[in-house]
Image (cartoon, rainbow, N blue to C red; front, side):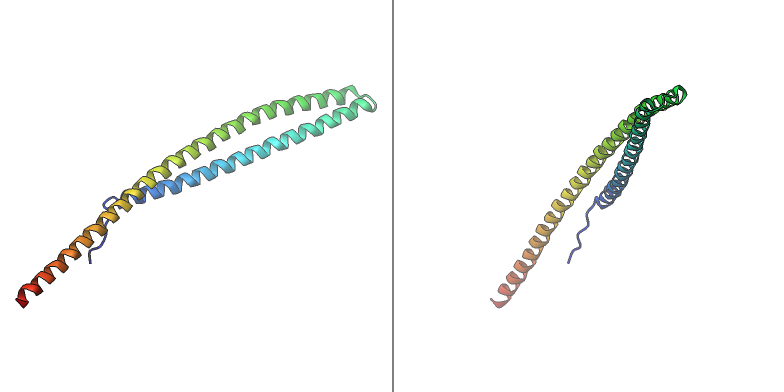
Length: 147
């Protein structure tokens, strides 16, 4: 019996590898985003600690130097939070780009898989036709010999 050979199998294999790489890149981008969001949450928590300390400093015995240092710490935290928000936005954009690339690669792979399926269906029809022709020739040969 004939063996099915997909002429573009090497291209399909490449598409599968590209999809695998795109999945890895998407996972790494997603992991990086989660890390950056964690850093942002830590900075926000630290700012909360400084703000709570500021309230305590104002309510207790007033020490101007401690209040100034605390206010500077809060300002520094605010600027670090703003900077981290920019990093998080950049990481979100990278995740989105990786997702779009993954979708694109998956569509290409699915296209080649559809082509393979159609080629296989054509192959099955061709084999069935050839088998039918062989049966017809055998029947015709048997019929002519019996006459």
